Length: 387
Image (cartoon, rainbow, N blue to C red; front, side, top):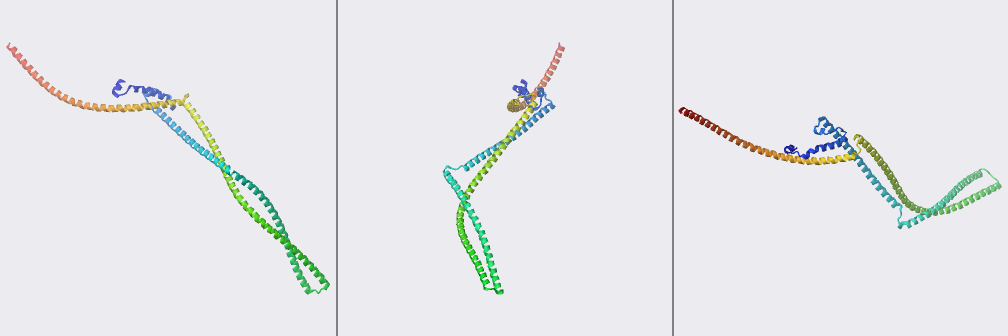
């Protein structure tokens, strides 16, 4: 550890990361359906085992991403439904306020409304009475018109008969010579017939005068009826206004009921969605329980894993910073080493030059020593020869 720290700046606290990483992976990998993970997989990793572990982690991340997307879609749909529900409730409240404003009569108009209601009831009673009288008079007028038509028909028939009789008399006078007595009797009969016709004409004239009086009365009643009709038109306009308000009230009530039904449907849909979401969550929890192999508290493990992952990320960031520092230090050391190498190369060149000079001088010295030794030997030989 000290050698690693001195040579590669591998700090001692980094050695404790391996068991911590093994504990984290022992807790996390069963959630990825990897149950045979051991410390040997970190110390001496194998290719196939590493591929299976990484694929399991990727599958878990993909599954988590899909589930997060589904949950986000459901949350967005739920928020949209809640917004619609709030809008519908606001619309219902506004409609209730409008209905209340339309149905309630302000206190300053209460007396006027009561007077209008009383006048309306009285006017309805008088109009009903007038309508009954008008109907009776119309019936009488129709009867008199039928009688006048009958009398006019009878009068026309009598006139036709008189003209026919006159023609017959003229013809008979030209053809038959009668006795004066018969002529007198016939003249008397004719006079009686004429009297009867005059009486009938007089009666018809009297009837016509009576009918004219009745027609004048009817015109007077028609004028009164026209006045009543104008009053009724005013009343109908006011009634139409009230009817329009009533229709508006009915429309608002219908809209309110419709909104209530939509609100109920939305509540039912929300309950169904919550039920379906609950069922799906139950299924997912069961599946997660089955996958975890008798793991009871998945959320706690996930929180632990997330906390440990956060710690790992923090430590990883620290390690990255340390690695950057180490890399900077290594670069500085490399620069120093390079400078030292340059200095050493220069010193070695100088030493080599000195060595060469020393070796040359030593060779010269050895040569001189050898020559001196040879000279000494010769002197010794000479001296020995002299002795």
